Image (cartoon, rainbow, N blue to C red; front, side):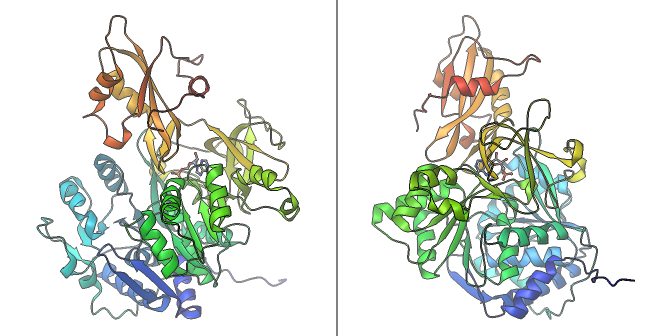
Length: 543
Ligand code: AMP
């Protein structure tokens, strides 16, 4: 025997233990949905997470059970991340902005046993409650005094009452690091939302990778405010990486407007923040209109959609904030690339630096990345050739939850991202298009296929296609392109009016354009790349 290292599993409970032992006094500050500011420490968070684990055992929860959360970023949600995963159950974060039918679908698909719900989201659950098949308990994430009045949810449990009086002496169990820890559904694919099941191992490896200096660069000197919700791929892993390095965490609750965020940045001396471009537009507008400056913020991670050049420049020039442009997916835990310049590039003139900064960035160690042509042949990393972007690595999906959609991987274990990109000789990846047929508006997905199907039900519509086009506030908005049936007397208004009771309000196309024919592939599918090309210089009336 030459000797060997210990075979200790990587477990999420170790993160909160580590933070409580080594950064016990470091604060976690939350703007509560109840309205006030709450503050406590990593030591307090561990205690309450253990109390919650004891409560879950008391409710009959066993290893592997799925527990749903419908909640904004706050300390109780943070405690649930650790209580649920720490005891070996699966923390299923649910996006409350999904359509009600989608929420019902994913709760039933995941077979959630308990739903933890923020006080201001309880009315939503009240309406859907009878459709949940597996849910045994609904827990209001508040105390009794803050329960909304007039609710009718039978046997509603209250978070603070569940943990009150529990000893908080829970011993985190040890188990295989490949055990499932958390679950997040993505609607950025065609068909029903699909679940991505993270493991303890993938979450910890992702936390290591995402904290690195050339990634999100968080440390015990950082004050991190994740605007990206904890129901969007675990707030990009920040509740884990923050613990790993002992950063102070600031949770903004449900108030994501520019004024509320600005107030927290200043009062809590925030150094790092992260979110989608739409959020930053709100913040920049607020600060510009009021003539405000930021005194401590150093880094704004911009991801989920492409960071517009003006945003990168405004943050830098007017506010001294460096934009870390990042790209990833729910299927990638989510981080794939982050844009940080190399030493040599610091000497480049400002305009050339901006050209580099516009790219989505370089791969984090752990993420293998390549681009391929239509036949699957590798394309060069010359910054010019573009093709399907494929990834693989220990925090990238292998199969969707319950094998939905079959094997998503290509030969060699490569996951096709549905993004089209270039990669330059320095390793910087830039997204040039999307091969998947979805639209991302303000960080949320809109299914073009569902919109097309809804429009095709109109007797005057021969064919309808929907593409995403640029919008300064929402990044993308849907444009509907319609081929009318001969003799049909269609207008923009009649088409939009027809859609009104068939789709969610925010899915409504911003415009309808009429054409004689829509381009198709050889197999009869709508050729979206050609359509996007045809409407390249089109400008939305709302833009
Ligand atoms: P989601 O799974 O909802 O996080 O969405 C992932 C998808 O969002 C990616 O496959 C891209 O299409 C898009 N996306 C994420 N980050 C960026 C970015 N920085 N620039 C452009 N598109 C992005």
